[in-house]
Length: 480
Ligand code: NDP
Image (cartoon, rainbow, N blue to C red; front, side, top):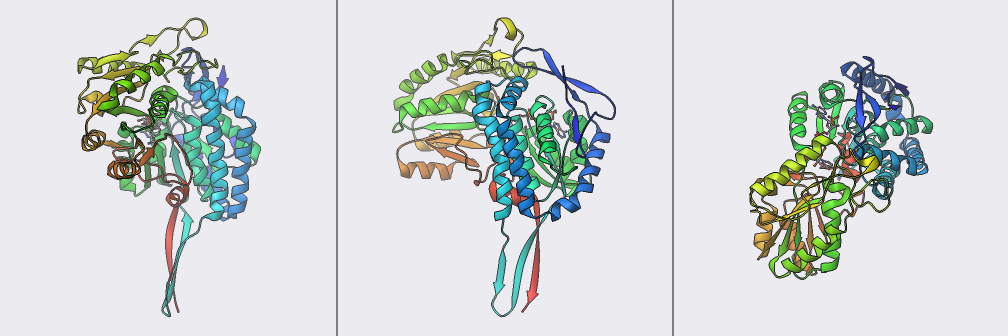
């Protein structure tokens, strides 16, 4: 049994109240680690350590801060296999996915922001013969980073790396459901020589350890990724304290597939965008809208692809679908499968829990599931399911496709499949989505703004947006 510890003031420490939570492995249902059930006292210690570290950290030249972040990136790369195994064990995702995506992207988050801090410039506004105005961007101070369970290390580092690069000190909380790689990261930070208190990681539940972070008066900003309901609660708590907020929330993403697309590529990528990580990526497309003239051929090929998605032990190379993250989440996703049937959906594939043998007999596995015949405004097509469940629907015109695509409270991501360049841009501009991919999905350039419109979030992460978020501009005017 593994015992995880908090990382506070440069030390690995037990929670002060001595309470721990069980952490089960989704593929087996067996508890494999115990994690600190931290509370406001632990958060207070973390904030005090961050405040003590702040004066030296913010004054350290960007090159020095960057060198430390790049060192952490190198250590993540060195330990890629160990971290990928840990992520898979903790989250249920195939280890092949963690090895190819989660861990390399966590390493690149540190490498990117380690060097980005050196290229972060601020503006000057020159008034000929009158004045020189220049902007200084100061680090905000101590900030809070709270992340979800679906891409644990990847999203945790996506927040922490820019905050540290900008000169802030951090109190961070990973999801209590997937804390393991955050704990391993704290060991790597110690090995890299990150000064004590610059990064503090407090484990525990949302109410127990997250709430004291969002309420703490010394924490100047909250960078949060998670569900829209939690985001709403955080905004309500933090706004009266005038904290800066970055909220990356839920989605109900559409895939728009036009008749002139490369059908093979559209099918291949739509399978990935529907079921990667068992559909538990905020960017997964869950509403697949297909132009009527290719609806049947698309459906046929898509369903053939779904039949080939082997559900199995995440440790096995042939498994394309691992376990869902928890029994509670599996039950939630299955309740949506029931709802889709009640709403008149025709089940085309899946729909059942999968019972595996041996080591994985107690795991939380579900068949990849496809429905058709559901109206655009039914709950299945409006609410985020966050699992391996998608709907297919035909459309006749571009306008109809756009109305469907934009018809939810969410606006995170969308994909467009077409060979018509004019249409691709026209439709992209008309979509109410913070991120639009044309003939691709999950393509990543860390310099681009990342985030959602409508109830999918507030603010943007990525590149200069993240560095701006973690800094505060000060305008200085010199009379000439
Ligand atoms: P939750 O909102 O349940 O939790 C997210 C984080 O917030 C967890 O660390 C959680 O802790 C913590 N938390 C819960 N309550 C509080 C509170 N009162 N104060 C402070 N922190 C709190 O989301 P999930 O973990 O279930 O993640 C899934 C959701 O994340 C989906 O809706 C998905 O769309 C969204 N998401 C959005 C992304 C985006 O970029 N827009 C990317 C990835 C996911 P704990 O888990 O320990 O209770």
